[in-house]
Amino acid sequence: MSDTYFRAVERRFAELEAEIEDLRRRLANLLREGRVTDIDYDQGVATVEMDGLPSKKIPWVQRAGDVRDWDPPTVGERVTVMSPTGDPGQGLITPGGWSIDHPAPHNKGGDRYIKTTGTIHLDADTAVMVLAAERVDIKARTIRLEAETVEIDGEVPITGARLEHNGRAVGDDHQHTNVTPGPSLTGPPAA
Image (cartoon, one colour):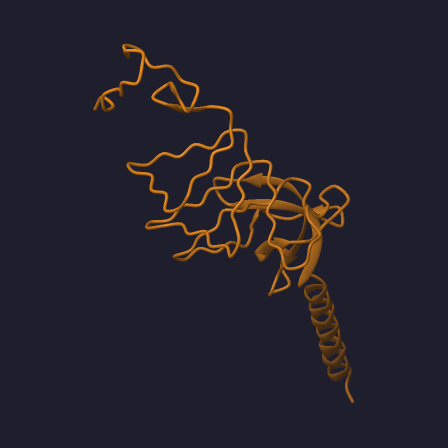
């Protein structure tokens, strides 16, 4: 066999070795763990450091149809970069799990628990419904309801020390003015 044939076989082996090496690299990059180092909230992309190397700015996974989420990662958060082509620059950021810096906020099976340092918004075009078999607890320093009408269907026990309406105390300890002492009844409330 001629030298030309052996050189062609040698070139083909080199090409195959390069292809195998490229496939190994791509396979190793299908799923990579890292930490978020920078976030561009306006563009919905972040940079992830994986094994000491920064990624390009890549998007994080969110729902984007009729139901849309906004749940960006935070700097320092452990994440996984999924790269179906094996190119992390074309990847997607997914949550990566708990870490020492970001431990689990809750540990009860069957519960859904959300903890954030920011604000949680529920925004719906028609209604937001909260259904519970027993009760719904809301714990806050202040609860503010803003609506044209607030309807309550059920008994309303109030255990606080003070109830106000238009800046005036309502309850069993408020005072009436311009009332004749004795057994007389006061007139109806002013409209």
